[in-house]
Image (cartoon, one colour):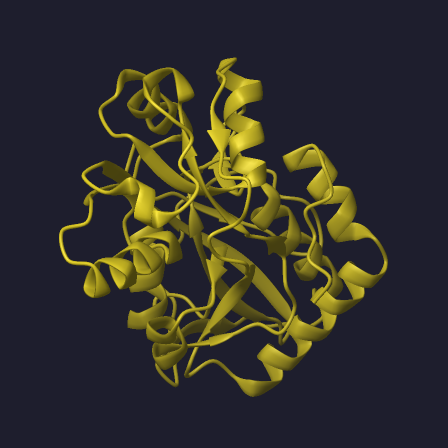
Length: 276
């Protein structure tokens, strides 16, 4: 489950199988290689259990919104690149990108100072990520602010922006509430909320909708977002500037032609594409 790695490949066609990938020659500190046709191989770090963003579907294929976006980019850039996916849990995707095992990472990354110092953000927003405080009203109340969480337990996925914003609040308000860290699946997050293992979590509207639709629960979110943002892909700082430009341009085209909205409807059930 968590931490396992599978490698899937795409080029100009859709992903058809998961296979073992041999080692690639390092080029300027990045994981890339060029085949005889001049097409460069680029590794993409993503998740394997982060539905609906990036996960293994029932057929055993890598799937999800972020994966589908990158596949569409790969289709557009197949003249230059062949993308391969390196899958892991959320924190490991950042480690893989930082170490040079991947040149690009796609797993709903919001902007924060720590990541900006280590990586280069893509220029095209992928998903609205306005964060709500989510709880099960059967276990108490619907929390509207961080101040209302005093003395409570709050689950956050390790290394996420939600963890960072909660940590920032605790620096100013020591011991206000307790953070429960993990890399839980959607089902595990919901189970924790409904069982009372923790009192609340931080999540966007589409996650709340997904949890209630999938598990038939009456979870509720705060009326107002505690943080407004969007998600982006990340590039390794040593990634080729031409690669960055081509990928950003392709993503802008896919957003403008409605592909992002179509994929958002497919994977989220609604249009959560940001305007930026």
